[in-house]
Length: 164
Image 1 (tube, rainbow, N blue to C red):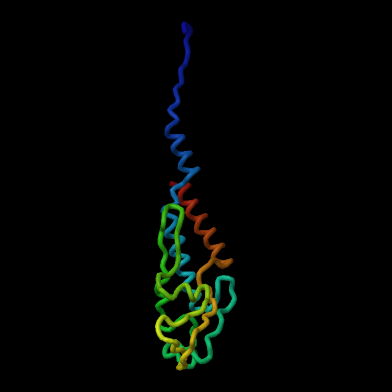
Image 2: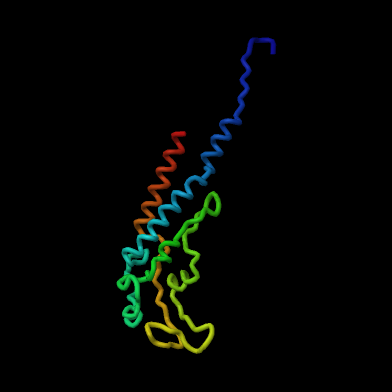
């Protein structure tokens, strides 16, 4: 070009990188926050004795309740191990799991029938039984309050990210 001219060269690498961060943010730092909240919320259900939907847990079998040595009035609490062993685990940048590794955790969450592994009977409440039916007493799950709090945690995290 013979005439005077202006040449502009745009290096859009930084703009594209910022856009990519906003489009697919690193949610890794968010997962522990959600896990900590859900762990506390789940453990709180052992105090309220309610499922995530707010319904009360099924009452204890009267014979078991009478024979129970510790924490007589509390459901899913003999010595507090199930509640104490509710933990969260960040599985990846987008996933956090909350639960318990106790071998009896699932039977209490979903309910079921326990049969003896050896022998012909189980000792239960001072009696020998061929099987024991455990009602479902859900402690894992999201309540309406949990859903609202999760939204608030995510919003706060997004505000923090936008100010960085």
